[in-house]
Structures are given as structure tokens and as C-alpha cells.
Image (cartoon, rainbow, N blue to C red; front, side, top):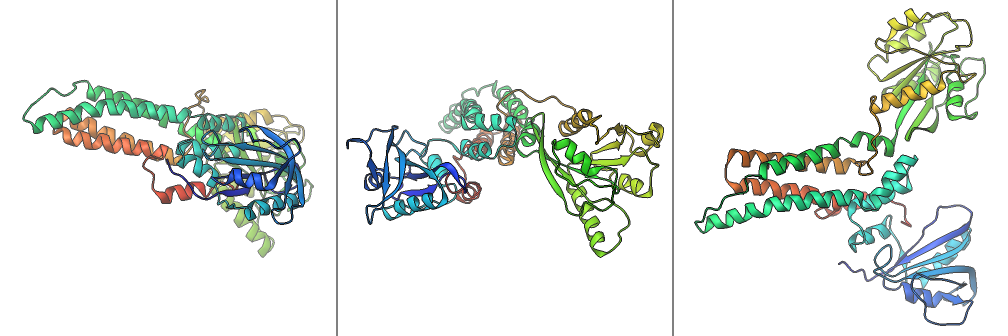
Length: 460
């Protein structure tokens, strides 16, 4: 188990003013730093692990009181990092936290790097790499479903599944390796005739896990939906209605929306980032022309395009241009102002983007908005139901490693089925084990670890 001879420290709570802020310390010098800085309000005595103590943090140079605090000393290996960890719970002002952190650094700590606490937890065997990655997913979760999936990852749901796959692969590999050893001694034992079928069973389990990635990615990252159309069809009103508050300015004057306005909503566990864009029309000047060019860039990058037209007016050239330029996208055709007399017929609408079914809504009064949200959800999931399992892939790195595992297993299966040299199947199976180990961090390169932990905040 790796051991670190230095002690790291960082503010573990977000910037800003709050009731409580936490300075976190980890390493062999954590308890010494505690004894230098902390003055208990109760009688002096030995500090128990995992207990809260009330007192003051004092300057190591002057002995002056910096703040009244609660501290907890958690001795390793029963701590987040597996090392001795000190948490100092201060009042949550920036100057206070910085003063306490400075005192810790003067007493023997050094500033932690991004993700270094969690990296130490991984290196000290407190969690595997997939669990460490789930920590940042939990912190940044954008929906209840994403939070639940991340928490399952932190608790080891994926790790247990991978460990089961690894154990079954080793059970197949061990007899094959024995066969090779026996052949070197001119003995020809029978190889396991069930090995190809057992590999097929593992491949089926991997395929089932890979099939969860689309939903996992949606729950973790969400999708983008751009609202587009000509001026004054109600794009800003629709954005306000979908998010449930007045976020965009609504006026009868065309060209009110000049910059993009983005807000995220949650639709049945899927985070959806909505973008309100400027109206598409013949540009009146260089600035507007630039803005409309940006609209098309946003539309091209979007997962879903909501084309909004005004059903109370005849179709215009701008309407038809927006529709024509989005025929290849996942599109929702929303016909606004359903509360007014219809000037665009259902038959005409059906001709515009077959087989897209137009949806009549009223952004002003809310009619059709639930159906619009359901249409967004259906497009996001391609009409499929959400899976109830907590073991769902959310990470592209994990998906790529599992696909490599499956490819190596398929090669091993082919070699065994052909009855060729068992050495080839053994090589393929060992390669499959390496790819599985890459997910848990057993065979992961240092550069990959650097990239993963660089996405963390400093105090985690």
C-alpha cells in the first residue's frame, strides 16, 4: 500500500460566505498539526478518533486565536484517504478559512493538488478507480437519477459487477494455463469443453452492461435542446414556460433576443439544457448577421432542435428555411399560439418534416407543454423505458474498456472453438483481464490518472 511522507491541506467547501467552512488535512502529520493549532475548550486529554471536539484554532506563531471551531481527527486507515485526516470546521468566511489554512501550512502541511485527497484514497486502497470517478459524478450530478447512479458507483456497484466478471474469467483461464504447462511435459489433459459457452455467457453480461451506456450518459451529462424559429413566434415565452420562471425578455418587437439564454430543466431524470436563440430572418446588419450565424452553429451542435412556428399566421419563407435546414436533426415541430385561430392546417404541417408529428402548444397559457416535455424525453431515450438497475455505465472510459474486453473475449472464443493452440486463447483472456483491470485502476497508466483527477476540485 502506498505511503505518503507529506501532509496535504485544502479548503474543502465552495468559495463564498456560509455558516460553516471546512479545512481538510491528510497525511502522517495531521495529528501533529492538530496538536499545534487546536486548543480544546474542555480539559486536555488524548484525542479520540472520529469524535468532534470544540475549541479554538490558534496561530502557530503568535498563539492568538484565529477562530472558534469544531475539529475531528480520523486516524487511518479508517478515513476517507486511508491516512490520518483532520477536519477543521470553521465559520464559513473566506478570510477565516484562508487564515486557518495558512496556519495549517505553517504548521507543516502543503497545499493539496486537484483531486489529491481522492487520489490518495485510491492509491491507499480505500476505493478503486471507478469508485473515485463516481465521486466527482456524485458532486456534479444534475438530476436525482444521476445522483443515485453516482452514489451506487461510490458504494461499489460497478466494482462488484467487474469483480464477478474477473473471477469468472480467471476460472476459465486457470485450466487453460494448466493445459499449456502439461503439454510442455508431454501430457495431454482434456481442456474444459464448456469454456466457449462460459465465455459466451460472460460476453452476454458485458453486452447487457454496454447497452446501459446511453441511459447512463443521459443521466450523467444530459442533452441540449435548442429552440429556433423566425422572430416573434414565442421562443422566449416557450423557454420561460418550460423552466417555470421569467428568464427571457418577451416583447412584441422582433429582435429582442440577441444573445443565447441557457437554462437546465429536469425531464424524468434527464437534465436538458434549453437554449433560446435569436429569431432567424434576413439580417438587417453585420451584427445581426453574426448573431444568426451563431444560431446555426448552436442548432448544428444540439442533440434536439425544437422548431417553433406561429400557428396563427401563414407560413413564411423564414419558417420554411428553418424547417429545411433541420431535416436531418432530431426535431420537434411545435406550433405555438394554439389559443388563437389556426392559419396553418394539420395537413400542411404533416407535409413539412415527415414523419415528424407537429405538436400544437400555447407558450402563453401552457397548453401542450406536458406533451412537449414527453416528446423531448421520448427523443432522448429513443422511445425506450428507463432501466431500474443501479449498475449502469455512465463513463465513456469504462465503455471503451469493456468494448476492448469483449473484443479480446471474442478472439479467445474463436480460438477455442477452432481447437487451435490454447496459448492463443490464454493470451486473449489475459488481455481481457487487463482491460477489465483498467476500469478499476489496476492497469491504468499514470497519465490517465493525472487526467482523471485533474477534473476534481482542490479539496476533494
